[in-house]
Amino acid sequence: MSREYLAYASIAVSAFIAYSVVSIARQYLRLRHIKGPPSAGFSKWWLVRAVGGGRTHLDFYEACEKYVRVGPNDLITSDPDLMKRMLNVRTTYKRSNWYDGMRLKPGQDNVLSTRDDELHNKLRSKMAAGYSGKEVEDLEAKIDQNVLRLIGLIEKYASRDEAFDFGAKAQYFTLDVISDLAFGEPFGDLATDSDVHEYIKTMEQNMPTILVTSVLPWLLALLSSPIFRSMMPSEKDAIGVGKTMGLAGSDTTATAIRATILHIITNPQVTSTLRAEIDAAELSWPIISDAEAREMPYLQAVIKEGLRIFPPVVGQMSKEVTNGGAGDDFKGIHLPEGTRIGYCAWGIFRRQDIWGQDCHVFRPERWLGSDVERLRLMEGTLELVFGYGRWQCLGRNVALMELNKVFVEKV
Image 1 (cartoon, one colour):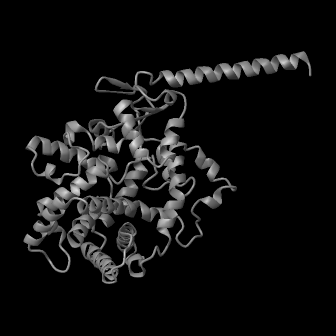
Image 2: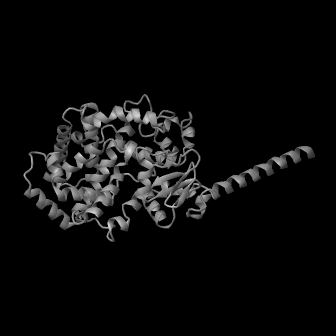
Image 3: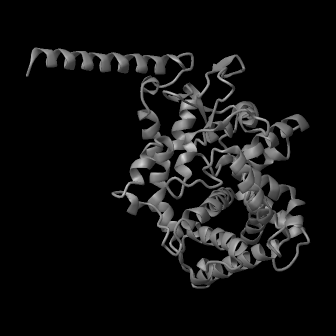
């Protein structure tokens, strides 16, 4: 090996090291004015560990109490004002590459993953009528039928004095509702008391991959290679990509049902107060109407408090600062162009300045005893549960209708 070759190799290695050091330093310095765990300025290790550990919402909450930088170019916020700034219809913020992890087919976007505003608007407009009921005949009647199926299934277990997993039945219910609305008939999970098309199994298998690729989007290219393609949903599968699509509209509502029911039945005062309101009301038979439910103040307080104490969606859903290169300045903090800012749900819905000193307590009465200004603040903040502005959840009204009915019929 010649000395000349060794000299060139030494120069190349030195140049690479120098470039790496400069890149890491620049990466660290761009957000040095924002606190974070020591490793966050240099790598995504903290973020990957949080997402992969199964307690992202708690890690983010703890981080928001101490710091907000969670990666070299990643922040999280528990400020509802900043969230609304990023999400409003006239925002300059864009979806970040976090959403690439929501692709159900490599290289092909859907309404959950696209970062193209024009395509997103087109997809939303095509889907909106179905979720609003304009293109789904008897939307509320379909939900009622599935509520009756849920009641029937639960009563079968009760008649045999047999224990059962209500969490699974709640997901059967929400899957049957969304399939009934989308395809004209339910999948039959409630009728068969089973995960007919293995949607729940698919979620359990694929969600860890989805979460990690949302933090490390470059992994998508690797997973779409022939070696790993078998891990992804198949186009030839009878259910295929639709498995995860269905879960996007069912798992969140099922989570809200499970969490709220848990808080109701473990709080005797809430249970008795809600039952008293139900008993005193003149309700439709066999299922309460959505309009009637909206007129029941304590029921509405229970639903709101359930969504607050256990928000169904706790992922980052990061938006990117895009403002012609100038970045953004918010409440005295400069946010450089290209910075990704994520959602700290647990932090937002446990802020003492919004929810009070007992923000960690499930207390529906907070929605009934607050003054007008406080109530307006709480209502405005709770909107973030379903997204906001241009990215508000399309299924919001359907989800609320399900919640309005299920708790009345099962408490």
